[in-house]
Length: 278
Image (cartoon, rainbow, N blue to C red; front, side, top):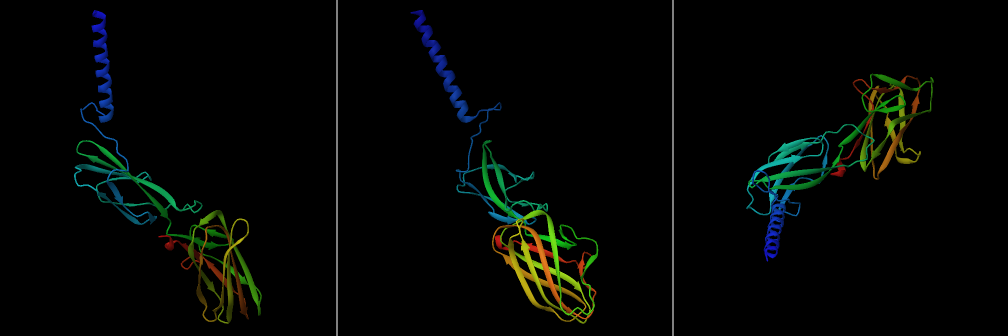
């Protein structure tokens, strides 16, 4: 009989301990007697922010609730780039590091930690795609440079009384550049004699395998003036990997001394713009 009573007592104690453990797990009781519920994105808290944005531009982040009965004590943001912020309405800028060889867009997951007055913490996530606004490369002898070179030039015509001169300039990039759909603008700063006519300029882009990505020809470019800033534009309508830029300049001249300017106050450069991505 005593053994039976002892068994019942032990069963009651075990049941009590088990029930206490279950309740403690559900409420996540801490040393201060408070509890915290584990929420996910299914709860009625959402982040108001764009899904696409540019590097180096200010992005607005805001919070909205589907219910009004939450009492919030704090908001903390994690932008996944090593930066944090606090507050319901915040601004953040992702900095572009000139890493042209990365395939864009770069995807960041923003996490908002909303702490309620009962110490509950709600974690809400928002994914944002980041694009560089543009890539700019400066023309230098035989290469495209990320930084503007010191003043330099390349002679385009060497022969006196050259009635039909064609000069091919080739520029290589050290690292293959990943390009999404974009527009490109090429600015060539050329110094030429007054009695020289540039008949045409042909621009070609090649990938690492030597296949043509895009090409554009401009006729009747410049017939007057000594210093000319010539602009050529087009678009690339597919994803590609840029490795080489080739420029072919055809001219009609009675004298030499035709120069392509690199660096200095009026550098020659090309800009790839991704404005159509947003």
